[in-house]
Image (tube, rainbow, N blue to C red; front, side):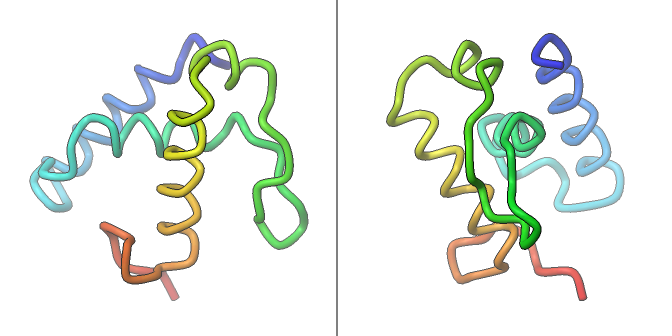
Length: 87
């Protein structure tokens, strides 16, 4: 799955340019969203474990933590989220 992360991120960016914010959220945001599939989550959607593929693609702990924060912000729709929470 890890080999498809950048392609997924590019697809998210392309969709956002066409139908969303105009692609103003920055590449790191779209890549973070694409990397979200490389976590193991509990039944509530909370990140429990980083997969080995995620660790290989993002070797620096601080980068992994920042990606996790971005994903959590978006999932919860809090004030740090760049998007709006779906109902």
